Image (cartoon, rainbow, N blue to C red; front, side):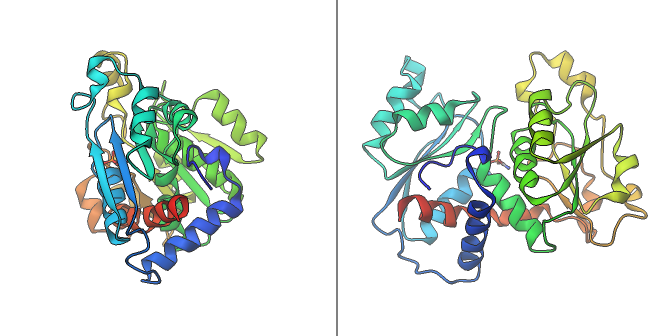
Length: 298
Ligand code: CP
C-alpha cells in the first residue's frame, strides 16, 4: 500500500488487513516510537476537526511529528501556486502527505506529483477512504459486516463519506438502502457501479419506510458548501431528522452512525439511546489512522 486515494483501489483483503491492524493499535499492541523518525504533512484546504486532529493524534501516538497548513488562505495557493507545485515542494519536507481538498480528483492528482505517499482526507464530493475504514471498524465492533442491511440517509449526491462507504460495503454482501431528498440521490454512475459489483440497492422515499429493516443507519448532513446557491440548499435543508419517536420497533442491534459534524439531522435526545454510536465512531478515527500512517511510512 503506497497512496490511499479511493476505496476503488482496495480489495476486501486490504480493508480487512487494515481493520485488523487498527484493532491491534486500539488494544495497545504497538510500540509508541514506531514512527519516531517520521514527519507527516497535513494539508487541509477545507475545514476539518475530526480528520485533521485524529491524524495528528495518531501520528503523535506513534512518536512521529506533524506539520500542517490549515486553509487555502494560509498557503501560497492564494498567490497562485498550483496544487502540483505545492505537493512537489511538500514532498521534500515530509514522509507522507494527508490532503483534504474541495475538488474531486485532487488527491489522485497530488499522488501523481508526490514523491511520498498521499492519503486522501476527503476530495470534494469524491472519496474519504480513512472515514470509511473507521466506519467499517465501528460496525465490526458490534456485528459482522457481511450480509447486513445498511441505510444511507441524507445527501448521497455530494456526500463523499456515503460514496466511499457504499463502495466498501459492496465487498461485504451488504444490502444498501438509500434514502435521499429529491435531487440529492446517489449519482447514477455510482449506483450503477454498486449494482455491477453485485450489490442490492433499494431506494426508499423516507427513513420511516426503511428503518425497521436496518442493522446500521448511516446519517449524513446536507453538504451545504457544495451547493451552487443558498436557495437550492434551503429547498432541501431540514427535510429529514432522526428523533427518538422514529426508533420505536427498530432492531435491537441497530447502530446509528454519522461521520459528523451534524447539522440538525439527529435530535440530541437520540444521543442517550443505545443506538447512537457516532461519538465512538469519531474516536475510532485514531486507531484507523495509526494503522494507515504506519502502513504507508513503515
Ligand atoms: N468526518 C469528518 O471528515 O469530519 P471533519 O470534517 O471534522 O474532518
